[in-house]
Amino acid sequence: MKTILIISGQETTGTAKGNYNRGLARAARDFLAPHFTILTTDVEDSYDPQTEIEKFKQADAVIYQYPVFWFTVPSRLKHYIDQVYAYDVFFGQPEDRYGSGGLMDGKKVMLSTTWNAPSDAFNDTTAFFEGLSVEEALLPMRKTHTYCGFTELPHFSVHDIVVNPDFEADRARLEDHLQAVFNL
Image 1 (cartoon, rainbow, N blue to C red):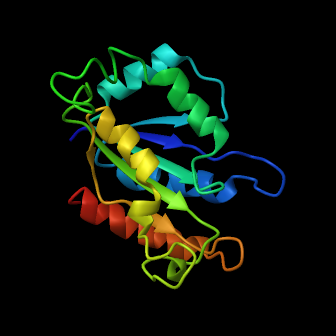
Image 2 (image 1 turned 180 degrees about the horizontal axis):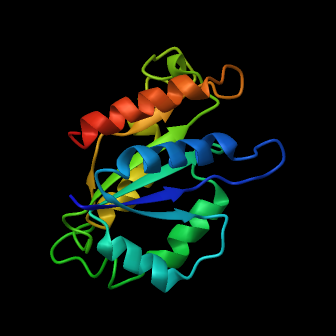
């Protein structure tokens, strides 16, 4: 693996300023830069879809850093995917069964998410997510990438960022995660 694309998918709205996710995206970039060529995109900045497609073609792995808004991706990140994930580039007609037409084979994807939900809201049948794991709650974004042929890397999540933020501890956990995932 030589090139990693880091996509910062925060959305600045109302009380959400995007600083936590921008900071984690920067931390990932700074931590990985000595080992890989790093490409970056911030979905709040203007971008050219064709340039973004070229970044994906160059990348061996893609890291998405984003907050979970209303149990899904922020609207700007969804718009980015709608604009960039082009037919005959990311996916095509399935060869034999639905979901088998991904054209990003050999590329890897990692989701790094922030949640207002505390970690104990997951993996507990009596809690809000009714026993779902974080990975299960992220199924739409995960399946978007499976559909395009990406292989999943272990994902990362930060919880309770509104009530109990601890950026330095979360940054250190992210660096430990990246070190393990990328065998550094």
